[in-house]
Amino acid sequence: MDKLNTPVSAPDVQEPKPSFFNLVRCKCPRCRKGDMFAEKNPYKLRHTMKMYDTCPVCGQPFDLEVGFYYGSSYVSYSLSIAFTAATLVAWWVLIGMSTEDNRFFWWMGINGVLLIVLQPWLMRVSRTLWLAFFVRYDKNWRTNPPARRERVNKDHMNAW
Ligand SMILES: [Zn+2]
Image 1 (cartoon, rainbow, N blue to C red):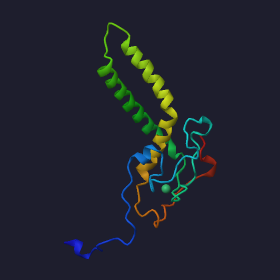
Image 2 (cartoon, helix red, strand yellow; image 1 turned 135 degrees about the horizontal axis):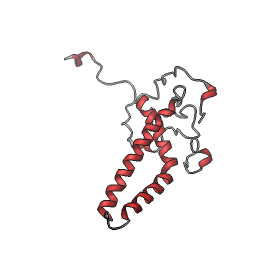
Image 3 (tube, helix red, strand yellow; image 1 turned 180 degrees about the vertical axis):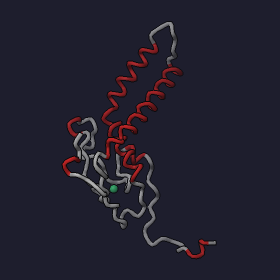
Image 4 (cartoon, rainbow, N blue to C red; image 1 turned 90 degrees about the vertical axis):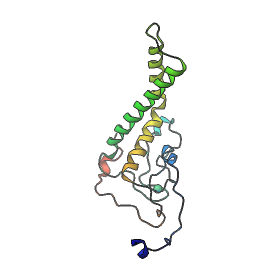
């Protein structure tokens, strides 16, 4: 009934909501178009964590407050646990486990190596997902200005 008073169509261009997988590709959570990291390849380790200060496409600030990305360690931890659980199940189904041999230890070793190899990408995705908890996709990102950050200290930015 309240709908009678609301406008039928919004004046701005309606874009389909981009896929969640744009976050896995480390795109800005607000426009899902701009890159968050200056270097595309996470395995160029010298530049793995080098981020843009703001989104090159929509202007969303990436460092919201002092020490913002400390929280991404929770995301990283959860992703690592999920990955480990997945490899455990896969190993169990495909290769099997027994107390009679060392298959369990082979799984532990291989899982550990995979986690280390995945680490640069995991760290990036964790930061992207952490930012996405606080910055929602905005379908009107072209016209809406991004929210201003409240407190930042230039000296404390990227200080890890
Ligand atoms: Zn953006």
